[in-house]
Image (tube, rainbow, N blue to C red; front, side, top):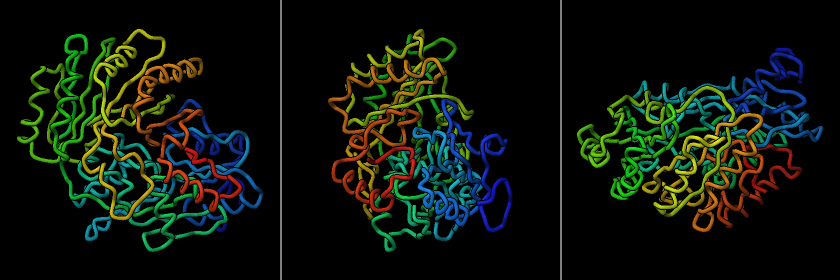
Length: 438
């Protein structure tokens, strides 16, 4: 590899001490960063092939990063970090209803490209997240109850394996990898691009209802009962957080139907007289307003459990423990699952725990001094669910070096198959994926 050069035959490699090195290892997660021996700024799949071959020849650890939202397994003073942020192309085929998405593309890139044809991807709540890493972890998005996991709608991938091979992976080409990559993460190589199906969606009814928990504590039980009656066109979540020293519940709604239908369905929630009502019909390119999550890099840890049902009293206890005034702030988010998420795709994949009806996630912004306290609080908030949880989601286990074991991310049959494939394609264990199968 060339060092700090734009040699046309080699990828650009940057070393510690250069501004480019720091630029490409920086990510959305500020709690920690990769510290590799050098960073490769890939521009195309060939650059990734060259970087992987060089690293494997020297038995060096290999990691890949686009946006750095889910960093949990950083390189520490050694190895090669492949930065794919420059590989951000998105090519939409409106006739086929698909998009070919580069490894560095963010959801906002895919949303904008698809919107030109009144199409939409199965993107998540934050458009700044990398589209590929999200999808490889399963992907529970704004239209999840209607269309299922993002991974269910991947039709083709381009993969660089640890031996430096560039493979096309599909239902008929490398079918074992096609199964594993859709939900099983990055333990099998570096995905440089993938093809995904787009949905015929140009608009939705989306936004949030905000409630003061001190004044309207019944919103928790009302929302839980309400979810049990909703059609699959309604995907929703409830997030409790501190706003101006008030403990608030933010009910987030994405409905695929008319505004009149949405008004009728949401009436039981509006009857509680929310402090703020931002629900309206919007183009899908404004879907970021549904959750209105902060899109500026910061330090945080997150953990989650997947549940068949939620005990209301237990949830209220957890919400009370996260109320303003504690030394560590915590945001509790409950996402309603079910619907199409419960149905396996035509071509099976590695996504597990489809029986779950709710995802309970705890996110804690951190500082250098309170990261351990934040993890301890998350453990406390989630401990009471350990006996009833069916597992956890890879997409919502963020920034924890003691992240959940693969035994909780996958059922036993899928875990064993994934482990066999990881050993086959990365026998020396050189890859540093966001979540580890072993």
